[in-house]
Image 1 (tube, rainbow, N blue to C red):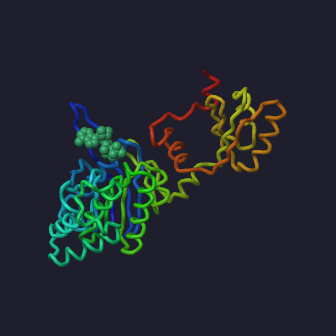
Image 2: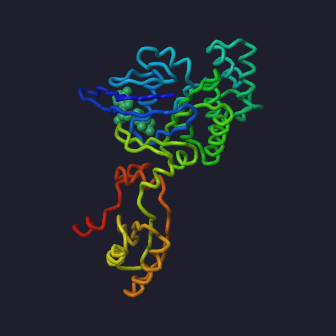
Image 3: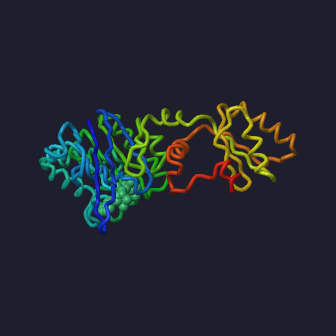
Length: 327
Ligand SMILES: Nc1ncnc2c1ncn2[C@@H]1O[C@H](COP(=O)(O)OP(=O)(O)OP(=O)(O)O)[C@@H](O)[C@H]1O
């Protein structure tokens, strides 16, 4: 459904060249729900704007819905739906009016536009709001209206740019349900950008992890998590964290041992099996532990291990044990 080869986009900013997207390659099969996951400024929106014909690439090629992006942009536009980050509703216009107008713009007859409007309103939980001006809708309702507008012409492929940014957790989960159900019922291909790991994990069949304009990894959420070797053990100690970290480092297979204040983190192949041994050695040295946690790898860990940074806030990783010693 989507084939991307060497796609690139540069911007000239005050005599400087910004490489927003640096020659990326990927494919999306029909019916897949694929997440494009990366931190702010990674190049997600630029990629989406290129794939939806709103921005001309400065390099590479792509086919979208079977049409060549560069030679047949009209064909691409006819086959896709695009829900932009900020949405596109007029604040004063009413919900039903807005959906029907969009349907008419795509060439549907008046009666067909009404039928599609009613169906989408029902599918996206907007029924009963049809006479409300868009400006009076809640954030979640407005996002669902944006999605209705993107789907009014029944595209086989829909692009969603950060569909749940700015929504509260309940509205986000509710929107995920809608996207899942519509995908299941209509067999649409969905390509969405997000910087929420839980969103990518909960929703996507496959994830492309992007950073600084390149794709740094791709796979199913489980495949990506399997790339992080081992479980994480996090312990807090009452005193002597450096000594505790040195003892932890000696456990079989222990790696990525870090210290932050009174907290020691490490990875081991099997957390549950390694924990009793760790407790024993700490106890032998009279180091008091105040809390302990064993966790399976998350997508957060995947991003951290791929890029050395946290996804959400661009934080630097905590210093490694060796670095702490060298300081
Ligand atoms: N029109 C533009 N002119 C100059 N630089 C731009 C332009 N659009 C994007 N950029 C730069 O390209 C890089 C990628 O931006 P982009 O908006 O694609 O990132 P993003 O991953 O979508 O971020 P966000 O999650 O914040 O939406 C950034 O460094 C950005 O400043």
